Length: 281
Length: 256
Image (cartoon, rainbow over all chains, first blue to last red; front, side, top):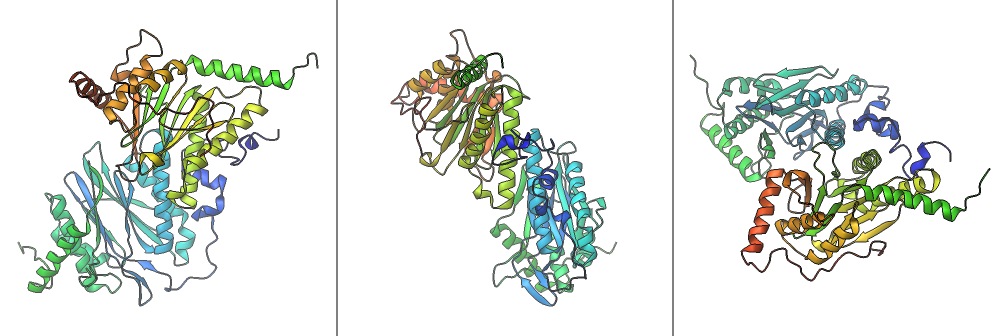
């Protein structure tokens, strides 16, 4: 009988490798080629011709948080996809959304989802909201080499904090910096415009539904001024992805619910193309 | 080498040793009900589980030495997560996992001095009762494909007998739970099990995404009293003895 590892026949190392509840760490010892962070970044800067995801927004409301994203991916001046999804369930009580290089972002989301579930199953408890946010920061930081070559991914993480009974929003920079945001936030190419809209539309006593409406309004404003952000596509019935996280868990709004929000926003814009106006004083 | 021990004797000693260890603990019962698969353990601990989630549709139940089956459980979670990550979530199956466990247990049994004192069930809930899969694995790595119900650990024979009498196909959750608890009480004549001394979980095919769910003590209590009311209220359903289809024999390895 050779080493302890070969005891387990078909999957050496499955039972014997370092005792960790982190899926990423285990993956690093089991099949390192699957880890995004271990790849050699391209030697020269990659151009615009790889699809990029654009604008995502998050708005908190008493008892939870809403995350939403437009549906456009662009490769240079071409619309690479008009129905891409950028907002995902991270686990029962959190959501992750991505902006930046779509391929790398989607892989990061998948790995992050498994990471959270793996920890939960092995340890019998879920990570704290900060624990999840920190874990994601490490993943973003591992992508720094890629980011320097033009393949950056910037996620937005939102979770329901059971102890405080409130939604929390975390933003990141390509170097893995993790920042907790108050009230609302937006990332991606249209984020400057979306954030301006959020600033005027946000109030502390939003209901879950109104928080969704604020998100759709902000995405409309982003699409209005940023060519890489897609507005609601009424002809094809493609609407933003809107999801809420509350004590009830993660819930993605149904097509009919988002459709109603999007139609209300578009209808309102016939009257006033700039959207709802904020009181001057 | 002072004494010669024949291989037959060696294997027999190991098997006896493992069986004794397993019989020392308390029993676990796994049975099918109308919405999925029910797992019930005579286990008062809130922290040390005998029943656990492995993947979307797959759960794990074990008896025997905690550190040994916990090691197998952790390995199983890794197996499932790594395959689901590399391929697709649908590509993680109970059959694949049972094979990995069979290999591991078999190798440990033949090649080490001390076999694992464990017995496992790996179950996967399907779209209907026909496609549910329940695999039972013993300490030597043998696999049995079970239907209906499984009892293992402790006084497994007495528990299995009670299940055989009480099991009914397509029972409701409450009545299946009542059958399971009655079977666990058959471990010895004085045994009365309260909701707080039970660990209960289900793979519920009507849920979404992750189908495994633990039941709280309050919910267990409610279900048990609902089943008792149903039975005493003269409802013909209840959990009384029915035409139990039954699992295959303890050693039965029905290919499937």
